[in-house]
Figure 1: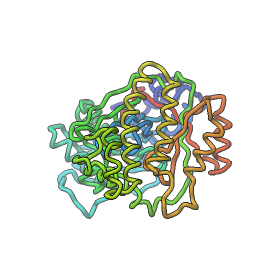
Figure 2: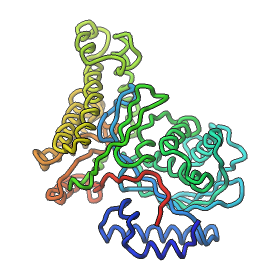
Figure 3: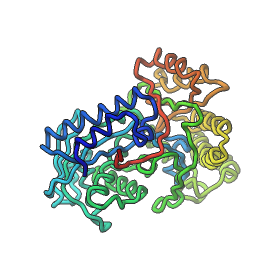
Figure 4: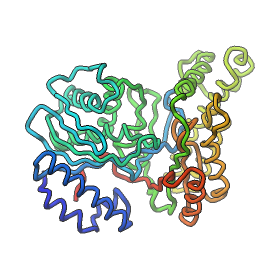
Amino acid sequence: MEKFETILSQLNKGDNAFMKELYGADAVVLKKQADRYQALIDTFKSTFKASEGVLFSSPGRTEIGGNHTDHNFGRVLAGAVNLDNIAVAAPNGTNKVRINSVGYPPFEVDLSVLSVDEKAFFTSGSLVKGISARIKELGFTIGGFDACIDGGVPKGSGLSSSASFEVLIGAIISHLFNDGKLDPIQNAIIGQFAENQYFGKPCGLMDQTACSVGGLVTIDFEDPAKPIVKKVDFDFVSTGFALVITDTGGNHADLNDEYASLPVEMKSVAAQLGAKVLREVSMDQVLEAIPSMRNKVSDRAILRAIHFQGDNSRVVEQVAALEKNDFKSFLSMVIDSGNSSYMYNQNIFPVNNVEEQGVSLGLALSSLVLKGEGAWRVHGGGFAGTIQAFVPQHLLDKYVSTLEHVFGEGACYKLFIRQKGAVKVEL
């Protein structure tokens, strides 16, 4: 715990090494972030009548390799980005968690009742309760605390604001009550548990892991109960490229059937080969069995199985390229992954609305601007929403102006991969 006067004096110096790791070296950006923390501290002071506390930051995440591979126990490559959720928090000596999030109604969670409440599904309070319950089950200490949170990971951006929130809460409990002893991967698994059991939403572990660990991480879900997580040693900032996520718009409301069809169709091909998921079979087995499968599963299911096998193997090759500092080969594989999603996985636009193809249009524009000098692919679930591009600095302004000319001002998020995950901010 530090006095807010001390924290603010450090923030206002404008040349803090920790802040540069979170947000980069641009003086304008650093000033904006310092002002953001100061505003949140002021809110915390006025709301909870406190003079000291602790600062926290939890990044959003981007999927970089392995599109729709996790649900068939495959591999993924993901990274933490510099858009983050931040918090000011302090123990309050009670058995209640009190949270004020900017732009949302305040809420409380009573830690004396930690059982699952289905009536509270899909609420932030249920996540806080689930995280607290699981941390306690694992033998750590929990306690009441006050927190003010500012969400800088935009909802609907495909950068996983919910996972960032989950591991932010885990980091707060870890540092306020357990001397920061909660391992980042353990924090991610706890967040996933809370989302599955207390929030009522099935999810994999990629989002929480990338947000919690930071940097680039590759995750192997071959044993989903014990995923293998490896941090990839690569300095993205040194490449001189920007990572640009563009929101192409589109209606997500009617896409549940589209999303659900992906794992179902992939697993239907696996079943034809005597397996539960595609991770248990090889590309050669899939190709060999196509003639006998075509009257039992759809051609689209077979194409999606081909995508899985290709993208699952490609993650290994992408990681190897990064570890050898072969960024050019990595970019080539990003394009290959995107083409596979388009041609085989077919999650670029919904079949019931072919007139609206924002993702397709965004990818076409990206190709026109970046061909030979960058990379582009669908981002996340697909069908509508966001695309991802790796853009060299000399084309950054042209790329953003081209995409925002079509999708509107503010549609592009210029990002970088930050090395720190969900952390206590050390000024």
